[in-house]
Length: 146
Image: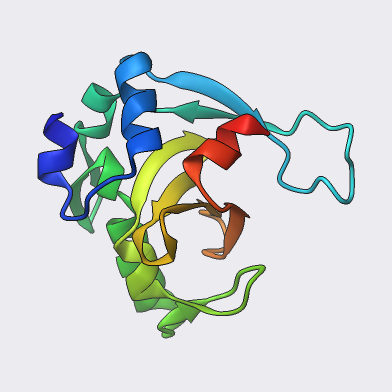
């Protein structure tokens, strides 16, 4: 797959298999807060197919990136305006450099769903309005199984 060549980390096989089986992407629901509302279906995430992952987009005044690496641009802005090198999460402070190295797989209402290569490709959310992150699942397989 072309995406495996463009990204500088080896992507997990469960995710690559998903891309092969869903070349146009898919919509997946996930409840981010099951403890608070266990009956809620959660948010419906638009998971990108390979061609969409490779599309470029421009953040005005910041730069151009392919969709899978779009958090590099958000982190750049966050560093400039927050004057900080980390952000908050449900598992403690996370270095912004770590977020910048992530692999975006989908979006919902301006927030980004991503895989974190420094945490065995666990699944996370980047909240665009505050720059904080939330760890959702240990792996892509466990994310889609919920």
